[in-house]
Image 1: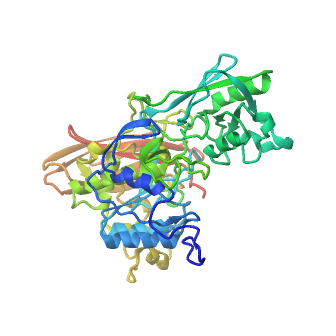
Image 2 (image 1 turned 135 degrees about the horizontal axis):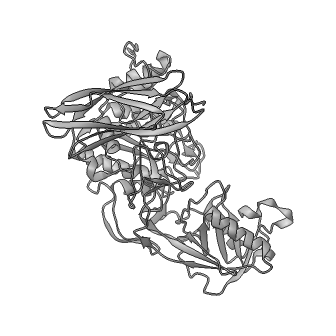
Image 3 (image 1 turned 90 degrees about the vertical axis):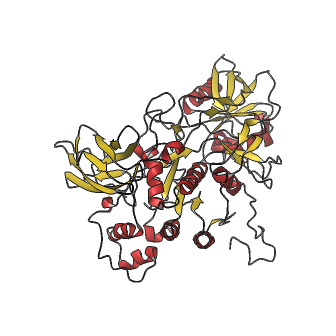
Length: 572
């Protein structure tokens, strides 16, 4: 048992205190008060603050060293509902499963029914397709993007080549004299020395040298500890194809620089082919106004949604790379046992970091609009999100440097200022979610396992799960060429608001919207529209996908929905 109640000496104190750091970091991101002169050992210094600085925070400990058990997660959600929270932020999740077997989905349904916004991490399994967690439509599923801040570090090779990477190393550095460079010099032919796994480096081969370690298998900071323990004086952490050009900064225990795959290949080749390779590592501190940003993080989990392909996920992205927030002093910034440093703040990356940004913004929306349902708040966050970066270009993907798609960024990057006044929202009631569940082919018992009502009969159900009044669209052209959806918009802007629609999609799909304009005479008025998608002949892209958008707009508001098109039933 994780709590350790069966042993006389529990290996972990049975206390809600945070010995790990993750919970402190996420809670302070959502609602921490402003703190001046915050930094991680000098990096990212300035005023640190959470999103909803006046919100009150209740934290529930559901994770232990052994993991997060479903029973603990549900007990935590139950308690939060009982305590009357307005927003539940959950930076945790496993893989995906049918909703009746998904603990977080079941707990989140009960919270949504009570008017609580539930915001969850999308997962850190990108850039692999279909790698999402927490895809239930009553959950806000949050992916991760970068900030316009960086922590550059440099590798100077003996052949005068220079590689730019990132690092949060804060010690004395290496001085300015290049030292010998080694790669993949294993003990007794061990093949794991290129990865710098524990015990793989021979001290006599690496002592006093900079070691190149390939990324993968073990923790990035552990590789540095392995190099240090073998007598190495520095590490170049080089990406392989799996992580591409994605760079994550770490507070390494020795001078270390993380570099992308392309530069990694050049450095590896240099170390393998030149008789006496050398390297010098230097550190550039904190740099602001980085362009382009945001960029979708390579690790951010991707669609399509394999549980319900008719619901587009993730919903939105927020800041999730190199985020500074509060930290426990029970653990060093690398979380390694060997790390004896203590700091009140730490810089971390993951969808665990982007989720509380959205949770905090949801709390601000709830304070501004106490009568809005969780679905309305979610809609406001989604339809106002932006899809261009600070260079006015469409969002890019860190994994391959190409344009990103809604399977990576959902509706786009959260825009808190605009979300306060979205103009129109796509609302959905508990009854709508029940009709959605009833359209999934589940048994009544399975639906009841989620909805917790004995009298559920599924007399009202959608013809297809895509009929849910969702703020985005996912269109599957399986064996049919025409897909038609009706959506309902609620006016939360001024009375007498007129909106016109613009639809945009690939040349292979015809899109028609009826009516083309909507006039809302009163506040709170609801209006419906129908959109018809037609797959044009001859284009049966096998496994292909394409994307578009539907925007209801006027001078004051642009209410944008992304659309994903798939041509074959996605195989699970």
